[in-house]
Length: 170
Image (tube, rainbow, N blue to C red):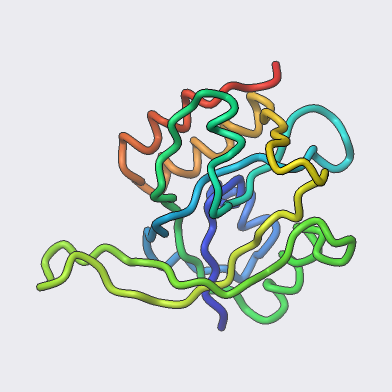
């Protein structure tokens, strides 16, 4: 089994279950010092951008937004076949996304430390243009998919509220 950190539209349990039918939910988790970005337009090109995480906040600085540096998400256990299906969904063969192993924090409120580390796979978008400030505002439907998943997994209310302030393209 593989551990996967979902932070974008794959937070939505219906979407992830459709893509990865053998997936099993594990726990809420987060990463620090990353920013949620939208550096790619959807495939097929309809409207709006799709999510990624980045170590730079440049797109948000140019848009005069103040993004959080803590990205909340959810961990899932995926089978080998589910991980390969997710690679296909995320277009790693084109490539539009790269799958990489990262360290995530799992909250442990009753333990002596506030979190424990674990490793998980996640996806990083390959920016669509060479301009580091390029940002494709997500569609309302896409952003609502992220918010629905964050709400379903009881991610922190202040993070969900921040997500709802992201400007959409429609």
